[in-house]
Image (cartoon, rainbow, N blue to C red; front, top):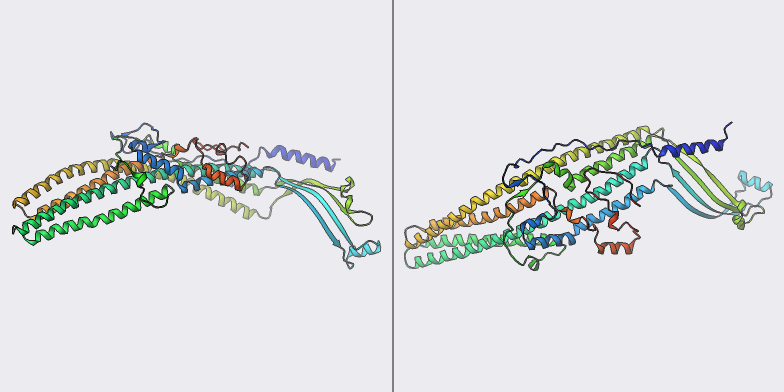
Length: 527
């Protein structure tokens, strides 16, 4: 005949042996994605298909002011710091998930209670017949532990999910860094473009003021009518009216850049001091192949890791379909003042009390609710798989859009440059002919307005060339590599947090899991 203790021991051994090899729920498999073999503009001579280093793409503009702005934005931008602290949140959340592998309940308890038995109760009647006091003190000290064995892999799946979420938080940081560098560069290009447009407008104001003086002199000499004077003033005032608008746009762009640099809105005179030309892009750009986006773009990695994390949640939910096996135990000492006993007897070995053994919990009547929760988690996973596939498509579209914009903006600027040269010659001839009296002022006015429009469009086109190249580098996922070897959380923030809370080793950069791996690899943390 089998002894009960031997049965329990055998059951515990079986649970331990099987708990490490059973894990319900699906394992993540990367879904198929539609990736083009080459870019649409790959045959253009200005495009190189070989891979390139995008770690510091802004250096291709050869502008030291731009390099300084990117460096300051990387170190001082507050939005980036917010995303960096979220990595610590995910790191701590992973620690919580790992903690569930070990006994979930570990408590030390102590109680001192006063009890009085009702004289009208069954125990009261028994006490009265036994001449026992109706009141007594009770003291107990005990340790309580409960350990749900991870038989079905529920806790290991939760660790997988938290592990992927940590990696996703780092990918989100990298994605924020890509956006930050592009936004800072775009603001700088916009500032230089507006400065050039302002310079063009002011130069045209000077030219048109001269035209007003010529018209007034000819009117005073009786060589023309007042109409020429009023037309000249109309053109002058119209050009002058564009300057306040451009100045407002310039200051607003400086304000936006100031915030990106972690500064209050300012003129940024010290930062922008130096060459004020629009940074010229390189004649060629290397774009690699579309498949490179799956490795390089942080938002693509983040989208996939979000699906990885959700896939593990299906296993967490599915484990609730099966019985949960636990080991529970209590060990302590108890003493009372009943009869001849005393509270001081709690130090006696005879005062010990022990309860221990395996337990089983099976939610057999909640199968409908549990099953629908599994379906919910599965539907969320499928949504994220489609989101990942869509993110890959959108990434390719962004590259194609920026590449087409970059190439066509170059062509547009080329034609506008030729147009500007012709417009200058046309204006010079119109002014000479007007001075000689061989043409009316309308010809001069038309030439002036056309030159101003062409010069302004050319400045905007030159800015668009650089802006589209920045968009291309952003679409290619460049810029986040500058954080490699660097701490995601600044020393100042870590110092403040360490003073407030015991973070142990979690503030060390070595605890941030690398995210340069092309395929998500779930692993146990190193602590």
